[in-house]
Image (cartoon, rainbow, N blue to C red; front, side):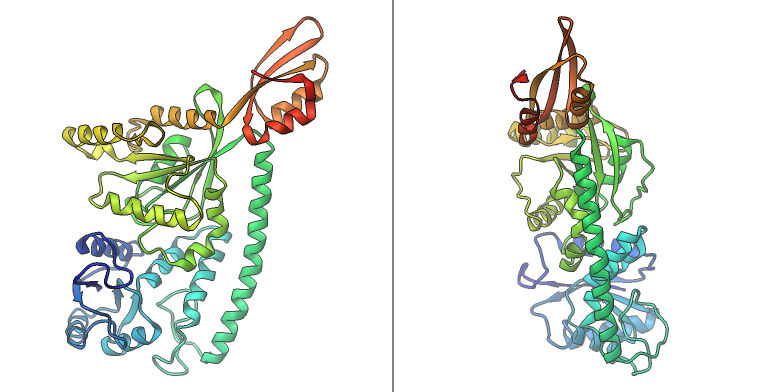
Length: 430
């Protein structure tokens, strides 16, 4: 069962937002379905103020208890931030496992993680969440809610041993995640030594990022009409118009009220976004809640230090193939009224519509931040020419006389000084 305890007056309850309550409930049902839970009942509970003991009122607790018994439900999902005491009291009243929004998202991430890094990040977030929830909700010999899943069997550890074990495991995971962070930093450093720039895809979960990633890179990343279909980041190199090669990174999808412990745990992965040269924000314009979803993504980006007006952000309005002709015209008119530097690109990752224009826009944005230089070298200086190929984008070569080669390059403005420092007076603006 899925319960949406939403405030009668919006924004009076922590966690409520501007989107319609029905849309929020539908999203939670989708989250539950994403880990193969069979949702047999879903409903909204109007809430004036959260109760300290059970979050919702006693009458509603008793009413839902009857529904749980009637349907023989084994899991109840509450779309709200439950305290350990509230969770324990509701489990006693309903005789079923109770998950709040954070717990549900953690379960999904646990099911989706495929790489060692992803599993570590999810386990760290899960243990951090569960550490304060080791309460004797059943008996001291039955398994507590620590660990990795909510469907675990009986165990024999007691609360004190559990807490100590969890703390030790968290410390070990943090050590391993530090290694992951250093490894990613080394990878980024090695990529900076070659003229490859990074295009990171971000967006709300199920906005079509993985489908767009596959369209751009011809990769085989899982893409499905499912929340959090992909979790682990994937990187592929592609060629933009005019031959510029970039690396495209598909990142984890965001969601409303993304647990802060997940943002912290996935910091190493999300640093790919922070370090990216282009941040491609993919929005599902066919969704009725597109504006609220875009606002949620902006909030997560802001928590990473990326402001909405960051010049690296390119917005792609995806799934225009789902709109009728009138909707497309209206959307195109809205896009045209935006300033040129922030104008959204209308695309369909499913059928490829608008993809060439999107690639042109990315290439233009990258080109605007790069400097074109000419370097004169001795025609026999193979080491110098090789250095330029490794560290810059070589646009052309021209033989001047018999002994001199003029090489035209394009390079990041921040790295242009590196060329000048190496070749001195032989460098000039193109």
